[in-house]
Image 1: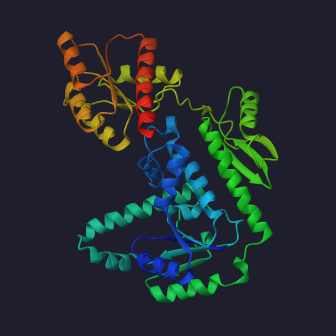
Image 2: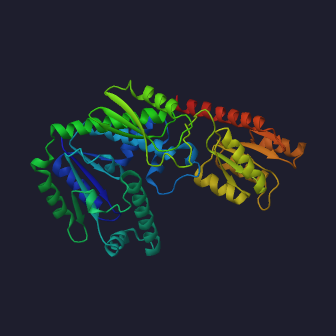
Image 3: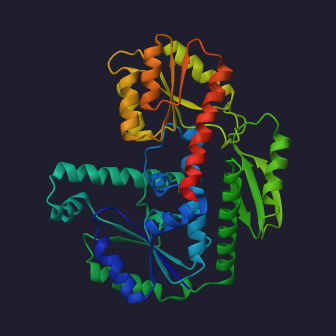
Length: 408
């Protein structure tokens, strides 16, 4: 039940080597798309949201949603479930989830110099500058990925693999023969220690998902069923948090003991916050009055309502496209694109975003126009912060009901 993992730089003959390897070994090919689909089933998150974990760019809302960390937790559990089958070729980003103590894994990396990669990409008949942009973006994503998972920003570092194959110097067929020769060794026969490490890996993934579901983000280590939870951020009531974490973990099947400790960053000013999935966390505040909107953001954060800020309509629309907020607090009178035009465009392209108008200059006609365009609510400045918070929570409840309807 050996496993082969393949991680590659783009345009390094992976489209030739991986299929041949699958054919020669008879192993089942598992790629990122399959693992993402399983993670979707486990989490209820969309495939698009989970796949963003593979990109270097992190959403502006991630400090409040921990969406990347949550996605990685579910992807890790999906990999752990799939590995129980054995005789697999795991190809893609998810190859890096398998920890080194699982020794019945042959870890491969396919790389080549840039000139060769550009030559291989030339088959696409795209301008070289466009191809180079794609390659650099892919390399950037893979560097961010190995940095996050392994603390190593060099995704091609030979220390991460058993074999690094320079595909500009070794052809596809010869590469496959090299892999097969190394696969057929006693080193890759599953041992009791390696299988035990695989069990620990699956338990670690299960614990991380259980904590994630309850809104917690702590480091997890597992050794022979003994779970250690490390709290990296400062917390006002440490003993209460430790007790809550233990209560979540100790009843998970396979857990023998649970201990907690504080990490090296525990005494930094950053405060540990448990996620509240009932509160809106992807909130975009749009207002050209900088002091007002910054103060509003701070006041909302005191109520555990995280938000990002845009100071004009153009920036807001760009953030809508790239970061997909769920709730928007929108002023009407702004230079450039005004609030009504922003509302029109948002509702035309992403109608699921709930928009709360918050203005000091509107009138009854504006209110009627905004509500007809699909605004969730229309509020006047100055607004009572409790009324605004409650309105945001009502908008979030509507979003959650819609999402639950889509899943059922």
